[in-house]
Image (cartoon, rainbow, N blue to C red; front, side):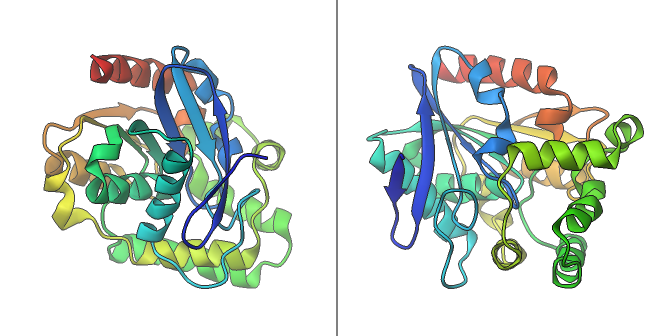
Length: 265
């Protein structure tokens, strides 16, 4: 089993293909399986996926942590693979991790793709995270909890054509189940997230992707990133919610392929 060791966590990863490396960072409740087959669509690149601490095959945390600690875990994967730098694609909390990685170690980042993510936890995001805390503390049955979370994870257009049962079963088939305690530690890290005042320091090519039906991070949060990261490019994947890359994968793949090709040049 391929593992990297950071200061305080053992991180499982998978490394495939050859070429310029692209590293995918997952969000809360999600391990490397949340990307599905998307990494395989980037032929000509070496693709790396991994499990953040507290989920999947990586180690469970024994103490609280913040987003910067998760960025250190990501750096440990790059170090273990002797990669001087990589393109970084981060979804949701993974996008926050990507921002902190780039701010702390800009030389290790070739480009950034920030997907369905945010810069600063404000009152709206805090209320959303607080609802998740309450749900996780009160709903003991895992399937019931996942059904409750479906509303947050998918856009209106997806929910109109796919049943909650199908979405939950699809999630369970691809993503490792996270313990309640681990999810609550993820939320605590997200509650303290704040890169907003430092975004102007990001000098790497950046693509911001969002869904117009995302109820966790509505378009205003993507706009904050676009307005504050110098020369950031942007793409709205219409008719998608928080899961834009898997709700309309063909649009995501085409846009990211083009962006990576231009960044490689």
